[in-house]
Amino acid sequence: MQRLPPLNSLRSFEAAARLGSFQQAARELFVTPSAISHQIKTLESFLEVALFIRQTRRIELTSAGKDYLKTIQKALNDIDKATQKLTANHNSGELTLAVAPAFLTRWVLPRISRFYEQHPNIELDISASVDRVDFSHSNTDMAVYFGDGRWDDVELLHLKDVALVPVCSPELLAERPIHQPSDLTAFTLLHVMERPDEWPAWFEAAGAVFQESRKGQHFSSGLLTAQAAARGLGIALTDLSLVSEEFQNGQLVVAWPLQLELGKALYLVYQKDRPMSFAMRQFHDWIMAEMAADAALPDAE
Image (tube, rainbow, N blue to C red):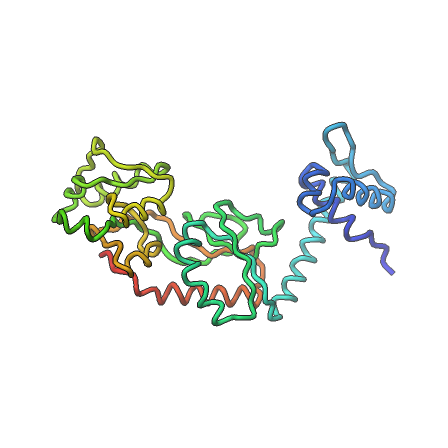
């Protein structure tokens, strides 16, 4: 019989050593700091070796603790991968997702009922997040990222390139027709405060001069500029896939058919080298099919 220490003590030791804090380890493992301390004392008693130097406000690994940490981290990772490989072959009905907020609100949620219709036995736990997911220390299975695709330690599945096109209400366009890109400067341009370069870049791509002196309105997000455009307040730059509902009900039209390519895209990501579970495979297949069938959007070209 192998002489193995308790698994909970090993998990507590690994978390405390990695994070450099009993309190942070306790938060990660959803226990109290005293429970972490107790588990590590149990481990040290089992090993008959001190793993930490305990100081007033901090802890520090002993040389033995540093050596032990390397081995324990590899062992726990091996156990995790073996468990994932085993459970991936079963029809797991749970999936935890983290999705970029705008994409979640404007694209995923209006369509998610179709996923449930196809997969009534799969339970989704979806949260909005702009942060990168630490998959190795999170219960998140998959995420949707927006960016250039340069992320380490994740499997990357391209969903769609993101481009911006000017949109406005049909009433606004009826009042003053647009015959060339420079005509847009006669309207109120709706800006996203954190993305001041988008309109100048669009006018440059259109071969027109951007008049910076033109008074515009500024909003905190692209969703708000699109909503303001639907209400006739001006012209917004948006990705058409995020305003499909407004196009379908006639609230928005394309003001000028030139897209500004951002060089960024939406990606479905998950932990590198992790086998897909049944639920992960089903969500992947569903979202890719929805992307392929998203033909209801107007063509901006």
